[in-house]
Length: 534
Image 1 (cartoon, one colour):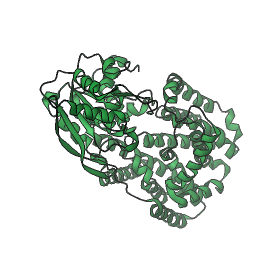
Image 2 (cartoon, rainbow, N blue to C red):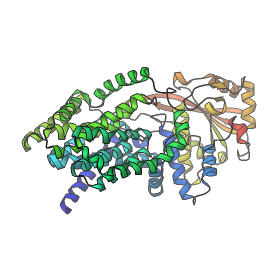
Image 3 (cartoon, rainbow, N blue to C red):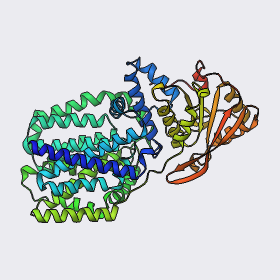
Image 4 (cartoon, helix red, strand yellow):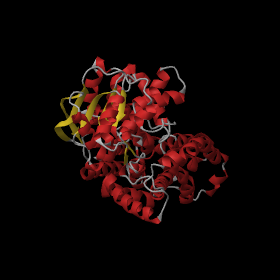
């Protein structure tokens, strides 16, 4: 047993080294947190959790509201809290810098590969199991989200552990495995709503294995009760918030048809035809005793359940949701497909599978987002801007990147600056950008608002996404140029977006003379709306 633990720790350390090396090669440790529009929101909300504990547990609602006013990318309620508890705990030990957060995601990727290794090793031995873990880390989507402050990799880890626990319950009937499934499913559901698809795994897997007697085991129902008790209240309280971010108001046949066609192609893109074909073979022809099919049945059930949920609930249609089932696909391909062969055949076919998958899908996608972090550090380093309002004009990703970077640069003096997002103070729209309306009718009103809101510096992104360049962009630029006695253009700074560098992509403007601190302003007036309710 001790030897097995040492071997597992060694494998985990190797996987962690690989993940860190890949992220270093991709430039992830020094990149802005805006590869996805949600990334800065996740990072800022994690910093909120860390700072709330570090500051001695102040009144939570008042603290969250004040935090949002300084760094308006807090998203607690839009997503469940567990990912932020994880980030906050990590931040207390290792800080909340971008490099620290990417190291955390590297660890989650390595743990996912190690868990897959342990599951495969029981059937095929250490060599093929190690190649299975390497295959997981070699998938482009796993690399991308293993280098982004997003929920996909931690969620994949929890969901994989959950279906493996349920598989052991189906095979052996132990109550502790059913209860563990319940705990893991609850933890996954409190990380992101996609994990609610785990509810479909028990009935499907029991049907696949024919082990109907498992329905009579109290442990299975106790596991379901754990999920309902721990995760149910959160979803009942926040359903109206999350439903507001759906791409459609309610499920429909048109949405389901579109989603099914999208995910059918995305499954091929996830691991290529080779991995998908091997997984189908492993799922349909598992030549194994009936009492050893639990994990295979649960892996197949998990894939089908997630695809069903994503095709029915109109949340969003995106490839990233498939990261959650990548370990299940590999498990089916390896254990379902290779277990019928001898030791030499398993080694040979596992190495062949790894090689073919990497040839077909292997890549090292760079995380090419830079510029906002450098500007944030430059602004925070200026003592005359302490406690002042900073306005950022960009697309959703750019605004979020500067908000997160200023929060990180403020460090232990968190809430040392107040960042305003032009899309929220000069216009109105919902979380998804729908219902856009200008707040001011003309540039002169914007100029007066800049004066009264005590804005001390403005960061203008000259290369926002074309689809997110709205009327308030032109209004603000005109307002800055209306009063040269008030505003001076400091200069330009480079920005890189998705690998494309613009040497003069960011423009810095500074208010002439001294500007009073932003504290004491009526924030309802500054924001043009009621304060966030949290």
